[in-house]
Image: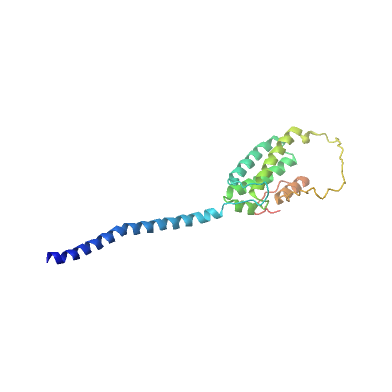
Length: 201
């Protein structure tokens, strides 16, 4: 009797070991798949926000463009204070720089910044801000506001046609707030306040 029952006991014991051996492995696979699904769900929207290229030769993507712009605009507003307060150049720079700084502070995504400002890509805005800082430095060196009213300068015009192989660099249109500020300066009125919606040129 003991001999006939031993195979049955052995079979049941083997099945029990088999089920027990695979149970933790199945649980591990489910956990691993869940982690992968979670990572994909989180990574997809983040990857969608990453700019791969500017599409402009020689203009590389700046991953932290928003932070760079905020720093450049803050520096611009600080350095423009060296220009006399009643000068039109200072008023114009303060107007559009303050507006762009406000948009960069309000919007965290580079796509929203580009859309709201309507003045090109954030990488182009960085180059413009860097050029503006260089110009402010030159303006403070030249001090054109100190030129006497009766000062005359010679203007030389060259009407020669531009060769076909020479590219014509056309700068993007100036933002609307710049023209409004310029009109206010020329008419003697106060500089108009620019809302975040009045950004497209």
